[in-house]
Length: 187
Image (cartoon, rainbow, N blue to C red; front, side):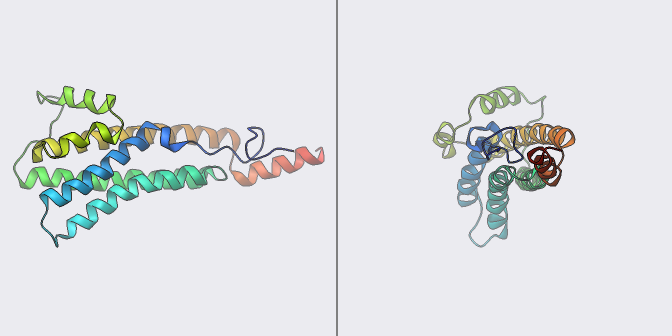
């Protein structure tokens, strides 16, 4: 009889989300955002809560989605999409900060863009970023956050593609439960 840890059963093992690079990047983004709003925004600014909540939602919906994914690919897909939407909201806030301060977004043609992208790609632990929180300018802080957001979202989209393929191949939980019952009953 299949158990939750049996890959032949309908309940699949929970993905160790803490090892996923896109999750790690959202942890960094949460800590960065918490520091950013306290350093750069004035107390009472509603943007503080909105940015922190968007960063938190990006992270927490990955946790919930992948935990719920044990029983429901549909729920995992929905919650990972919510995580992606929250990151896009956070992206907009960081872009707004650059725009209102007349600072550039470091597109691929910016001289520091490639090095930043490589730094963010290679560094996936909060501890690798915290020494810079006090040193980065507003421009550096926002562009680092934007780079991490892009990388995290790309990872989420890639994971969603895998979930979609698994759903198409295996069906949803109800289909899998019915198939498991038929196997147990011998028909």
